[in-house]
Image 1 (cartoon, rainbow over the protein chains, first blue to last red):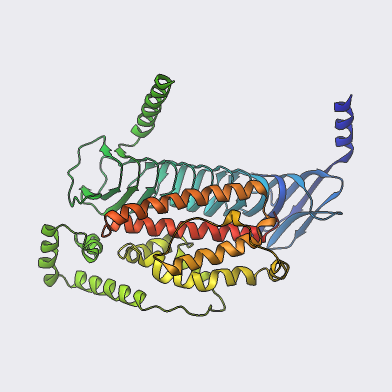
Image 2 (tube, rainbow over the protein chains, first blue to last red):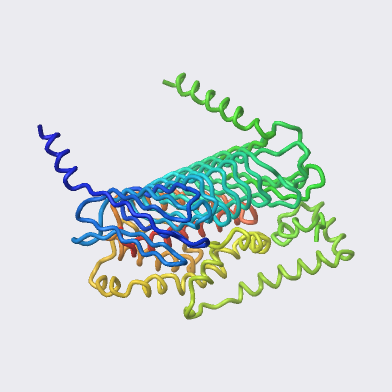
Length: 300
Length: 219
């Protein structure tokens, strides 16, 4: 009974906003949402459709000009609390999405994307040009993007796949996984987590992967031309293929594959560093995880 | 310049090259104008950084701070890295931290005048004060203290879960810093450890700055 009453009360309070505004090519969408969700999809129309579920106390304001469509919510009693947006935009429209207790998702974009939240996930498929995704307390996931990619979290993992372009990924307490990457410039760094890179090593490219307390797994294609420098204080280095070490000092050494025009820097203070061929990393990781799992079970 | 010695100049400058390679590089230098020029530039950068003084904050401060602490585009970071990585503690200890110490808190406070006024009677909460010890680098300690003060003043505006996450992650970074410091105590000339320490110190500043900005926002 109580449940039914609560549901009825909720229905009475719930309100739906559904508005479509025409936009010109080159216009940008800006959405700020304190709590709830921002879900963006694309279509072929030159218009933005904003559908929002919110309390009857809240009011959605849409400010549209030739250059920008701004969406935000207000409440009669101050800031609105929870709004769930479902927004449909032209594929090429640039997106600037932000929130606090907000999950952000984008699907099918062919434009620039900036997405920032504090407590929430960021999950994007698509993006062309500058793609910048940030969360403090949430996973950051990107796929099928190309351009200059900037991914940041603090307390969670970062995953990127099928990416083409320059990549910067940084977290403090989480793993970073980069797969199916086509890049000449990639940097990924964490403090407490593993870093995995499975992608190209292009001639003249620069790649840097570092962690303090975690393992690095990096793929090096068979025909790569790369100078590799390895630094670790308390970890081991291994490779799935033979390498000839040079310049060996106490915690640092290097070696060259092919003509060595690309530069690959690998740093783990307290973890292992492993190089393999593309496609081998996943198997390698699975094997290690199974091994660790078996060890855990034995200890139990 | 694609000389095979190019990437070793940093280690040479740090005194980190094995004797045999150091001798080979010194034999190579007279015949390589590019290497000589690069080496000279690196020496100048070190000298200039060491000669830097604290200065009052400029009007448009954050872009400069951001550039120096690494909150910049990937390309810009890469362009700079060749220099910053050649001089291990230059990046975090000299240029960046001098500017940051002088300006970061000022900038953050400038953005929140109303909040600052309201905070004048507030005792900073100890919960966001970190226990990391950086006596060896007073500029860094001052920069951290400035940001922690701003953060403590705005702490009540942060969600408790966010505060916990920030504390937890500052603790993780502090631990990494302490690990690097301990390792460096045993091997002070190690360029990797110097770079690693600088990176973690810079990361801590960046997280503090990010948290201080969040504290000034509506959370």
